[in-house]
Image 1: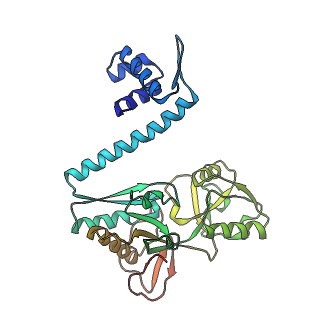
Image 2: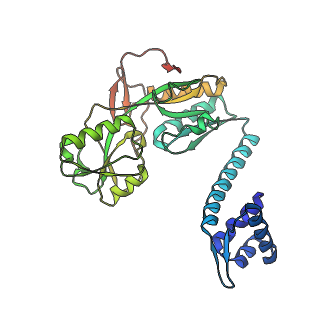
Image 3: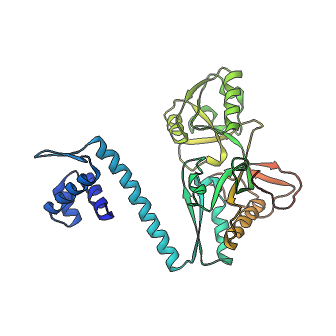
Length: 331
């Protein structure tokens, strides 16, 4: 199959009509029908069920088109990326992260890097939380991580950037929404969403809350599903601050507990490109200099923080005396 045939299939799927798809693609209906027969003969299964008056996807055809759509999207991104590099830029750096807030200061770091390397393009690559396959396959150059998560992976080093607190997420009309901070006692009689690939620190807090208090719990598949359930009034949830987005309708409240997340980025030890190494240094610099809260809607406040503190979302956290740049290599 070539990409023209993929476009044919996806357009037939969109319109569910050979005539309308042919008109949109500016080909004849017989040509499109012929191409569809060729594709089905090549893959070895029917993609569409045809009657004289209707067209419908087979179960296999539905799954096939879903995968083709993802492939087409990735190809378009690749073409656009390479067009950018081939024109104004000579080099690209790909930074993997689960959500934009995980590296909220990345735009400032990119701005500073562009002064020294104006022909280097930095592109964020978003993917599910705690997924390192692309990084290990060389598809990203830097990757957001919790410190220690990749320290035992040969050939990988980690760089600390900031600490992240744990938050309680509720609807913005919840009685707790006006609180500046909440604790375990505030969850009595509530339903807590748990699961969804929670990090170990968060699982420990969830277990402690459920075992020590009159708190119900509800298993939720992933973070986005959990947010939907919170919005629907099915319960509340605890979450790392680095997943905190700008979605309306929610209130993120700092949760009173000692657990926190040590957040940073990882790179391959063999990485030696000056632009990548400089971006790592700049990311450290901007997080050290940042003196404001890392929360949605907060104005970025620059100027070195007083004392030996590095901010933890909305609360400063003591990180001890300043020392040399901390890079933890593989063990």
